[in-house]
Amino acid sequence: MLSWVDGQPAESLAVTDRGLAYGDGLFETIAVTAGVPSLLDRHLARLSQGCARLAIPCDEPRIHAELLAFCQALGEGVAKLILTRGDGLRGYAPPQPAQSRRILQGGAKPNYPAVNAEQGIRLFPCATRLAEQPVLAGLKHLNRLEQVLARGEWQDAEHAEGLMRDISGRVVEGVYSNLFLIKDGRLSTADLSRCGVAGVMRAELLERAAALGLVCDIRDISLDELVAADEVFLCNSLYGIWPVRALQAHGWPVGPLTRKLQAITRDLLDC
Amino acid sequence: MLSWVDGQPAESLAVTDRGLAYGDGLFETIAVTAGVPSLLDRHLARLSQGCARLAIPCDEPRIHAELLAFCQALGEGVAKLILTRGDGLRGYAPPQPAQSRRILQGGAKPNYPAVNAEQGIRLFPCATRLAEQPVLAGLKHLNRLEQVLARGEWQDAEHAEGLMRDISGRVVEGVYSNLFLIKDGRLSTADLSRCGVAGVMRAELLERAAALGLVCDIRDISLDELVAADEVFLCNSLYGIWPVRALQAHGWPVGPLTRKLQAITRDLLDC
View (cartoon, rainbow over the protein chains, first blue to last red):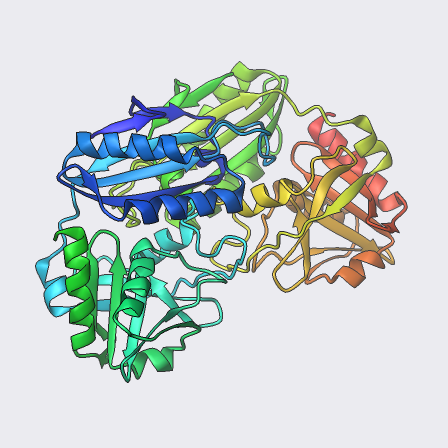
């Protein structure tokens, strides 16, 4: 496996890293095709915003250059970047100044069944709920036990993703995807100011939809509204768009707007 | 620094560890005096309960033996044990079966000012709130960004600890301690079924208080009740008990019940 730590080939890191101790860091998972990272500007912008919110130093030009070199070396696959607050003092107090650490890991593209994108997927109804924490909401940080527990709820191959709701019951996202619904030609996706991860593909689709003249509401979504939708789909930066065709007894058709947006993500990801 | 990974001296671990990727693990921080860990049975019991809740394999006899050997080698100080779910598959899905990883780090005892225990401390009123997440509540897991953000709110030496409230405003705990209040001779400490860390010293004090015939209520606590308390104190497994003498404009005396329980923790920790 291709693996760099602070720009040097390395497969291990110090046990004193605060990423391990407290999940004190952020990450990005980036599709790489022919040595080129997809949606790089969006990934870097989200990382930079996350660093600002967590007060983690972020040398964006250096990370940018390093990512380009890493993706070139990887060629084809997925590049995962972890940025931690670096080595710790003892205790929670962030070191002042902190020396952040960059960890890059390369892997193969996930081998998702083609039917996921073609025919749509079945959502598992996760019992694990997302806690409401505004100071962390939207960030792709390293505190991901909720996702680990939610993803551990099913092992069968029948469900490709799980539906995550918040503690109050609102529909938020998939375990590793964002969710959109379409009703009467309008798109909606969850407001992520209380919980959830603001995905780069979600951001890209919001911009693309607006450019197409589609209205997209960012708002709270109830389970009843999800069930009453005309079309439902998930998106992320690796697979693009998967239509959602079923959740328990309920089913949705794979509709024309989903297919239109899916074609855009295919072009973006070259998949 | 004394450092073992899976029983062998090592100062680094694989970048693929899920403790780093997702905070997918638990930890214990143990006071060590003359080669002997304090409250070891309570630390091991909490770790074991945490592993059961997160479905992380826990070889308790092996961890017990390893901790005893590590503390013997350390002599004096603090032993930190991190238990992670080990190396990851790609993605959140927990490997079945997982091969958990044991990381032990030794350090010096923290050099807290003697006045903290003698005269009591001033609490910083943290703006960072604890999210309500029942499936993780009580666990000493590695998802600790809330504590990192809360501890980053103050740098002055005037505040030795910070008060953490939950999203709904209830009084829960310190950033790295549990909180008790005393009113009319009754003890109260927060119900930790929604958030918070169930400290081993809290558990020890609950048992000791009961043995002394003291009533202790585990319940929701409002800020008004905290302010109206006769005595307030914090506890953890390293420093025992610190009386709380102030929070913003409000002050409490250091009272007799606090001193009585503090003497018990001094004997336990030999400090």
